[in-house]
Image 1 (spheres, protein in one colour):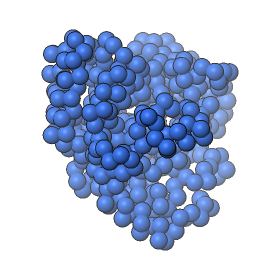
Image 2 (tube, protein in one colour):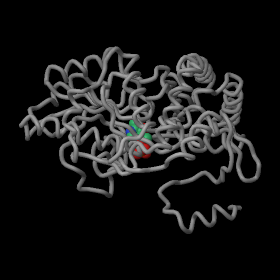
Image 3 (cartoon, protein in one colour):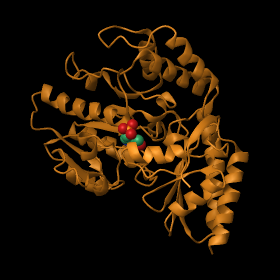
Amino acid sequence: MKSDIQQRADKVITSTYSRFPVVLTQGTGCELYDETGKKYIDFLAGIAVCNLGHAHPRIREAIRKQSDRLFHVSNLFYTIPQVELAEKLVQQSFADRVFFCNSGAEANEAAIKLARKYFQDKGETRRFRIISMKQSFHGRTMGTLSATGQDKIRAGFEPVLDGFHFVPFNDVSALEKAITPDICAVMLEPVQGEGGVRCPGENYLQQVRKICDEAGILLIFDEIQTGIGRTGKLFAYEHFNVTPDIMSLAKALGNGLPIGAMLATEEAAKAFSPGAHASTFGGTPVITAAALEVLKVIEEEKLVEACRKTGIYFKEALLRLKEKHSVIQDVRGMGLLLGMELSVPGRPIVDRCLENGFIINCIQDKVLRFVPPLIITKEQIDLLMECIDNIFDNMQ
Ligand SMILES: *Cc1c(COP(=O)(O)O)cnc(C)c1O
C-alpha cells in the first residue's frame, strides 16, 4: 500500500526517478528514518553527497549563523563566506581560481565553456572538440549529456551538442589516436562513478596528463563524485601524482546543500573575464558558509584518513563475500566509493536490503554501489555484510 505522500507525489512530480517506496523524514549520522519510524543505515549518502552524515551539528550551526545575517545579494558584490571557501579550496588543491555554481552539471558546463574559450582567446577558433570517455557520466544538461559516454542518457534528446568524441576509459592508445588539431581538452572522471565504479589502470592518468601536455591541450577532471574525501584522498587525483588544469566539484561539497564549483589553474582560468560566464545563485552566503564548514570538519576530524581505513575494511569484507558467493563477479573501487558487480540484476538485492533496513543502490543494472557517509563505522559495515550474505544464501 502506497502512503498518502507517495500517492500525491505520483500525481504531481515528473516521473524521472523510479523511487523506492519509502518516505524519509529524518536522519542523523548514518541513520535515516521513514514516516513509519523504521530505521535504515545509509550506505548511499544521498548518492555520495552527505559525506558527514545527516544533520551534522556543525553544518547546521554554520547554516543557522549565516542565515541570521545574509542569504543572497548577487555576485555583483563581494561576500565573505564565498571568498573564504574559495581560499580553502585553492589552498587544498592544485587550483588557483574557483567559479561557483549550483550543481555538478553546471560545474561541468563551466569547465567545457572554459576549455573552449581558452583556445578561442588564443585565436585557435577551430580547436573546440573535447575527448571524453565511454561509460562516463558528466550530467544531464544538453552540454553535459553530450559529454556523457552512455547512449541511454543521450537517447531521446538528439541531436546532442557537436564537439564531443569518446574513447574507451583506460585505453591510452585509443586516446593518442583521437588527438587531432581540433581537440581542446580531455575530460574524465579519475574513477568512473555512475558508469560502474571503474578505477584507472596503473599509470593511466599520468599517461593521459602526458598526452595532454604534448598536444598542448587542457585536462579536465570531473571529481563531482570522487572529490571531498570520497576515495581516501581529499581529491582522487592526489592518488595518482597528477594534477588537471580544470576540476569540477559538487555532490559532497555542500553535504546536501546544492553547490557546484569549477576549479582551474591561473593559466586556464584567465579565459573567464567579466561577462563570459555567470550564475545567479552561484556561491551564495549560506551555502558557501556550509561548504566551508564541511571542509573544516573533514580536516579537523581527519575524515579523509578515516575513509581510507574504513574503505580498506569494507573492501576486504566485500572480497570475503565474493569468495563465498559465485554470483559476485568483481569487487572494485577506492576508499568509500565501492562497487560489487553481480552476474544477476542488482535491483532485487537493493530491495531486499531496504526491507532489512539498509540503503544501497545499483548502477548499470548489475553493479551494487556503496557510497556511505565517511563516518560509517565497522559495526555498521558488518551489519550490512551479514544482511547481504543472508540474501545471497537464500538466493541459491
Ligand atoms: C552526479 C555527477 C554529475 C552530475 O551532477 P548533478 O549535480 O546531478 O548535475 C556529474 N559528474 C559526475 C561524475 C557525477 O557523479
